[in-house]
Image 1 (cartoon, one colour):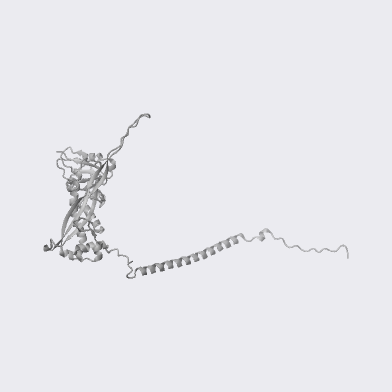
Image 2 (tube, helix red, strand yellow):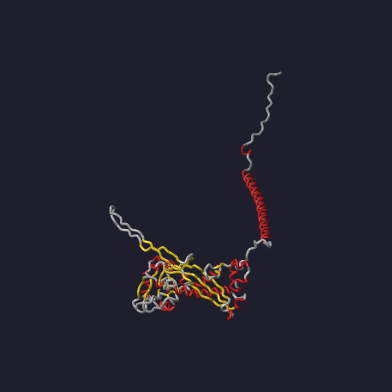
Length: 391
């Protein structure tokens, strides 16, 4: 064995560089985006399937419930929108045939009046129609504040005196003061009338008897209460607006009032009330006011800007009060005031009807006695200003 043997030198493996170890960056990004898109599509498909199944399940349950509720005898059938309520049907049957010929469920639906005269109270639908018609004949009801009453006397608190503050130095003693409160009583009065209806109309089911009675009652009640709320003397009827003590205003200088006097009347009312006030006068006075012009030659009267809106004077609406007096000597033909704040109307019994089929039957008529209990009057005299004609 020789000391020096030849050494075998093998070729070394090629060394891999970092660039060769990594993949192409663009290909990696494209693969990642494709993977996310595939996952999103799969998730959306699963979500659509689940929501579709839930919607079908809910639809099946609703259909099953509707089928169950529509079965005869369940008592769950919905009342048709065009069918009148049971109270309205009962009242209509009472008017046409009397309580003696009514079904037991209709008799139970009638509201019996608690007064000694007997009768039945009109249902809410009939009363709403009556109230709408009342406004046609009693315009003060549309301008005033209307509230229900639970007794024959309404006691309202009223401030009769205010506090008074005074100026003083740092060590000057303060003066004592306190407001003064009183009470105001508004009585409820009875208003009644009757209407005769022929047997032929009562027997004719095509005749809209409810609407006819509502209009007839409202015409008479509106006329009577409108006159009382303006000129009533407080004896057996409300105390009217023009008979209220404490009203202030201006007096016309001549037999015919002028445009300047209307402007003075407008500014005589405090701003808090003037912003909500209306002009109240009768048709004759309206004719005189429409001729008035200011110093620039422009009419004070402004026609409605659109159908359904009232005419205005100095920007405030005009309401025709047929019971206001004409512009004669010492009369008050015109009132400017905030009726919503200063005039209250209290309805105790909206309408009670007593059917009398006997007293007028010889004439082929059935008489209906109707009565209302209502009260009202001025509660804030400072909310009104009046124009008084000279003697």
